[in-house]
Length: 559
View 1 (cartoon, rainbow, N blue to C red):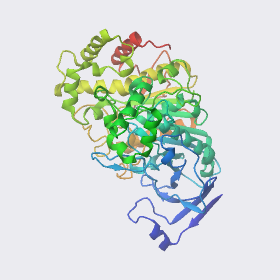
View 2 (cartoon, one colour):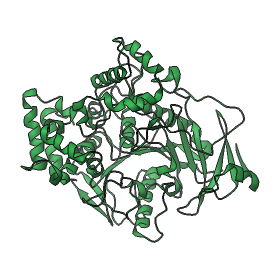
View 3 (cartoon, rainbow, N blue to C red):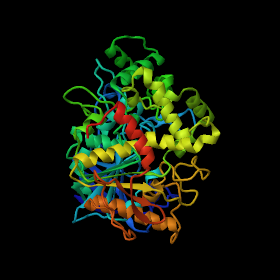
View 4 (cartoon, helix red, strand yellow):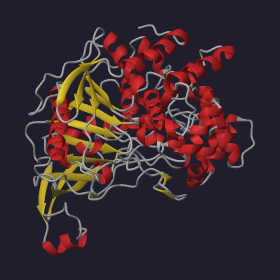
């Protein structure tokens, strides 16, 4: 049931934030879902001037607090009367950037729905965004993931929060802890979309999941998760896939880190359930301040050193019943049209973040830290130094690793975390899936001031991690691209590529002067997105060949 309600100006003035540039009309809309009635609002896009409807802060699960900490999400509780969906819900508990403070709440399982028209007779394609942030920070908020660009292309956008760090990914065998709760939250959100999105004009039979960085990895995990099968129909993994071990940890590491963080917080029990009972009683903020120390020193040397991340599980209710690599090698994943890609200099932001000099000197002193953890597991101990020196020589030659080798360090970071995992994913996806696999390289450098990775700068060439995001989302904190600019044109073309893929499974745009051909087993084709568009093959071939040789020797694939 849909009810449009025009509010009196005086009433709107009390409810609205006067400075908000998006709320320009005193008009509300209500929707009935099984949990109760929601009241959203009509807003005007800063990007296009078109109107759309916004429903924010919708609970899709019961608050995961108290005895539900470290437990799977449960169905949301109903409410009486009309619940306002006019503001975003709390973000999940996380550290504030560049400070020792925390923000957010454990009660954070909210989603937002943005729809172009209500009521709607023709169901629209739905895009569900999963934010990145190293499984540690981030949210589905309009800062930076505003819906204006995407909704203007006649799709419905859903953005979600999910539990992160210890709250989402702590795992300890022998206790009543469920693994991968952050991913289970995402499955619950997709179930909510399946059951409710028709009330907002959406088509539950045409849902695309998409995400970037850790969010892209989550998209790929959901493709591997039997519990998510049937809840989505297309997938886009941007700068994040999980075919090798850069974005997941072993069960052994998960157990060690759970016990390590418990000890840091004051628990010396050897009993797994005793450890978990203790951790359930710890004030939530203390987890955030101690999460970095859950990793051992050698683990902190890795390209990604997240203390808590997805790991495979054991048991009939496992979300990940095996390692991602083995699931992919056996073709055990949901086969849907798939898009994936990277930016041209993924590692630039990561390489320049934090104490660069100490990171470089650490690599010089201990080259074995350049060997990815999953590759280490297949290397005999007496050959580890040899393999480490092969990596060092390939990227740095005979140079000493330091400030003069930052470009090479950027390439190493790019390949280990994003480019090589994507390369292997494309190989395995095209091996097993009858659905198309579209690959892109984003190499368009926009105007200064719009980057989501300000540390990257222009000192080194290429587009850093997150470089494509300003061309898909209107950050509520920033102005729109100037009309008629090349940035505005690129934004329009990117949004059309993503939304046509969501609607039809075939990405295209008005300005695309070539046909975006999918990759195959025989030809790893990709679309280069820069000032124009061009089909190319074998992205970063010599670098990918190097890693293929290492992995084939020590962790042979079966594709």
